[in-house]
Length: 358
Ligand code: NAD
Image 1 (spheres, helix red, strand yellow):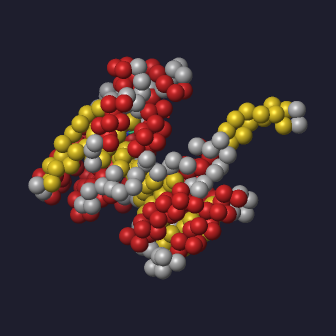
Image 2 (cartoon, rainbow, N blue to C red; image 1 turned 30 degrees about the vertical axis):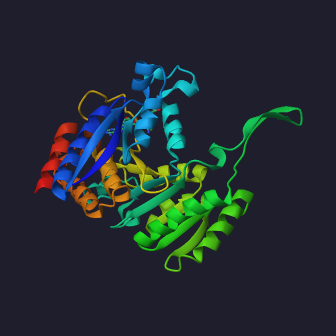
Image 3 (tube, rainbow, N blue to C red; image 1 turned 120 degrees about the vertical axis):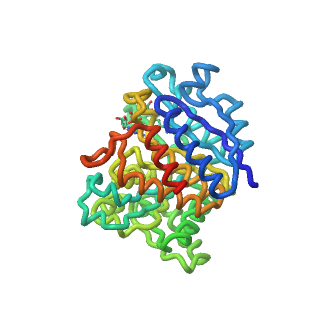
């Protein structure tokens, strides 16, 4: 029987609570689909600072590198907010992306039918099958370019540089093209080629690559228009591929189409099948320890792990179906609507497990 080694970083705040539910689900999926999972629990974030003085201890990086994938809860909290930037819990997040070469960030924005009313966008605009995948470049561009303070015309000034190499564009565009091939075959590359030279290189490179993907319908869109189109007619999108900065903003915008932060999963992938999977929300210190956090985003992150790192598409679909069905009867407080049973973190995890076992 196949055994997967998974490094688990529960993190801070609600992290441990939601990750426990995701592990419960993963164990049941393993029994059902014929694999075992072996967990290596490591520290990252505030808990790592308390134990070792550093948000990303070398032992954590080593463990991640020796595993098939990584499951992360969330990091951060008030206790560590006064520490210098490089020693804060969030420094662990940037550090682990760099250390593990996680250059492709996948963020699905989809509507679960039972939660349609939770979207801030009108139902007729959302439609019945909204399902967008934002593919964001994660380790290049302006967040990693040269920056500094200077003087211009005798005035204090500062600069950041957006730089992309052709191989950096090619490897993320490849993820976008292949993702489109696996879905409905439409890829929208988002840039600002009317103004930025780095975007002109981006567009040239993506266009050149399109010849190798004749089955993918490629379009290009300026980022400002894309920001507008995402709320005007979101159903026109299937896969969006874009740079680090634009993807940061657009993926947050796209995620809000589905209404609740407690429902949104993400994957950050390196070359091959290795990836780090986490909910997009933070450590929610305001509700930590109360047993009311929504574990579904973390459970859906496990579904992404099954699909993208382990190639177990049927298992991933089974988890997504169980999550969808759980919301037909029960809700955690963040997605509660009258007429449903109000449940806590553990009860929601138990319900997903029960539905998987049916
Ligand atoms: P947050 O996402 O933690 O919380 C925002 C709001 O959403 C809060 O009211 C919270 O209670 C609610 N919420 C979030 N997840 C929920 C869930 N699963 N179920 C129910 N409600 C949920 O964002 P924040 O308050 O801005 O940040 C809190 C801490 O998390 C900060 O230290 C921040 O730096 C950190 N953070 C970490 C990550 C990460 O680990 N990837 C991401 C974002 C923020």
